[in-house]
Length: 427
Image (cartoon, rainbow, N blue to C red; front, side, top):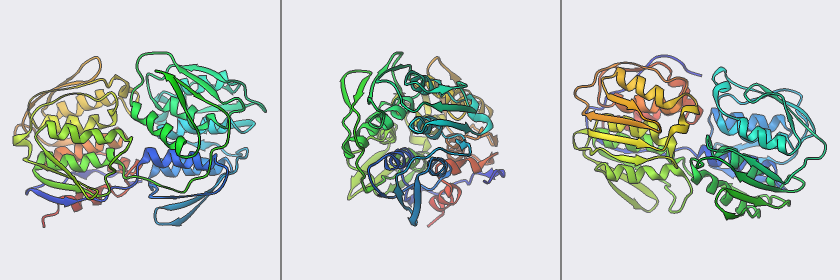
């Protein structure tokens, strides 16, 4: 994986770009898990090839699943679960460290989970607590840990606090139909972030014949039964699309993303509303989403609650940093537990570049004064792909922005540096 210093390219002209976005990481990893637990083989098209999705595939293979590459972005998944002899490497991937323990709980015996050095700081305790309530023994509340599953799981009642991540809910729902008694799952805590990701999980389960009943907020019931095999096509990742669309906002011009779904459950779709509120014009024609914007000189500040789309925070913060006026990002206190403490990292790196910014209890306050007063220097990524995206956006309009670890973008877009260079190439 690349870790060399990378000077973010400066754009000296208005953009007129078209960017094909790889498949959704969230949908890819959910589809892989569901295919692994289904009642027959499945073919998945549009599958993302990235570090996170590769870790998911590798972890499922360790658990006995046969995943065979049959095309550039296509795999065939033949379900089968077996006890792994080697540890499962979660890297820094939230979906892997949260989803695969629930899958491993279906296999009697001990499974060992390991990850990157930074992974021990990512919260996973609630999903492990949920598994403990089903009779699974877990020896730690953070990576690395060992999980020892009994021959027969208990249940179905489980109560967890999922305020730190909706992935805890999704992890248990994805596997629920395979639990002997299903699951009667409750969230007990403050509001769950990124609710659209839970909706995505429920919709993908429904497509495979599994009904998730929710008669009241924060309560989900799934009865035991089969997960039907389904050949599926993964949508483009709309959160990854946001960084390319944001380039039009700060530089000016147009950027088009083909294959934009009409109806979807991806939180990244919220970026279109944010962009139009900041002064862009959006059009969705024949599956193409096109954003046209005046550049940083014409941007408007924004006050936005990103509780349901918190992955957009670094990109929105970078755009707000070069706008004129005070912007506020709210509802994202939980991203202090993402790949890094994203609020602290954004405050530090943007301050270093001359931005007037400070953390609030649940977000960021940014006093944008335009790009002209900001300056270059090293922009640390903290092994976080979203931080790298923020630095790349600043580099479009500020000379000398050097990212210390462009390789971290391989988490969801291994070809990001080339995609970025192609976007701003003068035509």
